[in-house]
Length: 349
Image 1 (spheres, one colour):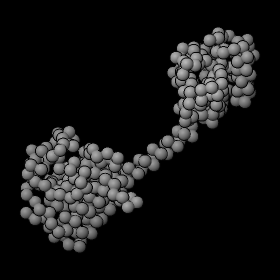
Image 2: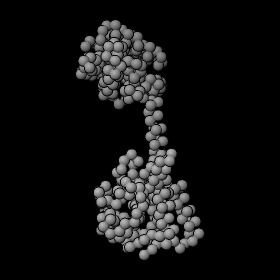
Image 3: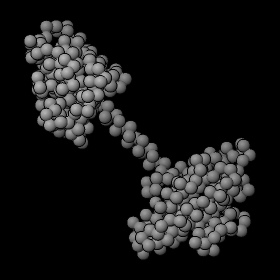
């Protein structure tokens, strides 16, 4: 049978209004597509409506939203995607529009009683280039030959679905980019640890809390022994490998309550709430000493530790005391650890 539109201008206006509402007011992509598919089914007298999603960078499809389809049939449709004789996959590849029946209808739909399906490739245009975003399928349980304005309606619903998918992906991309910039503002891109700015902010917060609670905080500064010489002899690529290796040990050695950061070119810093700072710092030194050589170079770090409130009442005083202790540790050789205001307690590598 032919499917034709007899609703007239009033019906067309209602359809336009419903389509615009689905696009503008639905809370998420699934809800938008569900409303559009329901509208297509109701208007066209169809039995099922499905939107398949396609990543623009790949040909593979995935089942997006299906209306009028039982869950078990939807699972079969998902698993049957991508075959050589799969009409949906062909539409995605060719970016065409087709009406198929008989053996060309996806088998799970045939077994569910669907006899005819209309398929439309969903694309959006950006910069004069058509970008594939999915496939629209509308199916009937009898022979159907969409014609005239109803054929245009299928195309219009497909266009609305394509815009909804594209908009959702753009929003996701913006969110991901925003999160990336947020991470970059707080982390060191080479090592993935916190950066100096984040370290300083957390240190201020921890000091304020320790002052209120009358508790201790340890701060440690770690310096990679001889990194400047490694960069000069073997190049900055090897130096970066060393930095990443040390950062990995730091991340694995600290407690959940601790904060570690890359503080300067060859320096890392630690905030350790409580009195366990020396223990954590020793664990770091031992972990670095156990690292396999990088390009034939053995790695070691020296550390200086300062404690709040005995070695400083502010972040500046505390970091200054830790740096002074680090100078004393480095002066005694590789792999040493020293505490502010006290003699060192450590072993060389």
